Length: 519
Image 1 (cartoon, rainbow, N blue to C red):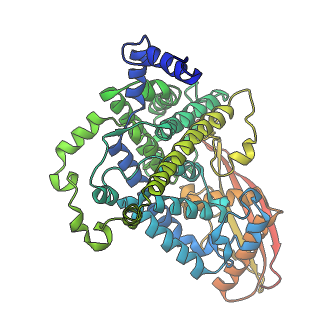
Image 2: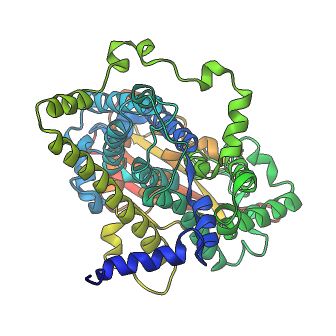
Image 3: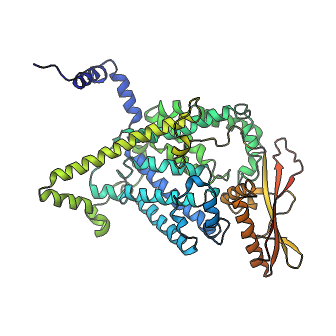
């Protein structure tokens, strides 16, 4: 009788150590409890990510001409000269026409809607991701951390079975798993922990967060605060408590979310979600609260979802029969019909190989995703430098220095004046604010995307972005006043935040003086 192969002996040893009855069996069971994800949590994640894509498109739509066409502030010539790490990645850059951009917006909306309802989930999700990257690459100057996290989280989520439950795909399939555990779901669980822990480390390098002062400084930034946020600055003690609470959630995320299980984990996840949603009525941070919420939904455990199902009507929680979806949605998927036809014609081995290959490919990509998140997420704050970090994270960013190491202690507003052919000086675009401090600096911007773009303009006044903005302002002033515009002057007003309750005088910077050439 021949000896067993080395692999067989290794497998037998692993079974004795980690299998049922082995010394490490309790640790394996504990790890499985913490790594298993409820498929209803993945379904909720899919619905929220898809809804966020729709919200994003609706929010960008009013500025589609301004930010994505040749008649706006960022024409294709400027796109080609800036942010070269995104070169060649934008379908939106095929044309600077309004009709083309509108068509892509509508197409992205249709894919996002199909993603929400779970129709061919992975396929439409990949299409949504491609169009999202294309949109981001067309004008990176209007992006913030929420956009980057969405662009990073979405492809990770697509490696998991997002359509397993609460989807048209699940109805057509007729069966579903309660929980799943693989490398891809582990990567999805790891991503928010990397975001929170890395951000906590970067905040520790500053002087204000761990001293309890940062949120008071942040809420003194009038261009960022909205609604309730405009009043929180009057309650320094409350802000100090919230500051320490937020830092605790960031620094303790591995303990609160990953090391817990069952109801305790669900309760911890709900605390995080509550903190994220608290940003909506207080800070102008775009998609960030919604994407953060989506990132922790996989931490909501079966006890939570069982409680949700008990309070919802059966019509919501019980999937309809496939026949009620109509012939287009309820019919058997074409790939399944093709596989059955191939098997009937004696090519069952080819069908089995294709399915096994597809499953193996997803598994391998899941392993790569997990390694990527840990390698580059941890490497960004560790002493070692990951290989090819700039190239690897150009699209799937893993640097999370939001409000770190310290929040900015000043805010800005911009004034764009035009000198007309008759010598008068007027506001070039809409009713620009005055040089005096505005009652609410956030209202001087149409949206947070305009604030981000103007920040990019102020950092590139002599470059393509500054020239693109100045030429657009010339055209806007000429159109608005019906006479030629001689020149444009862009000012930036910088106001120190009133942390002690008193305002210093703002500082005026002249950023651009541009000759319009009688546009």
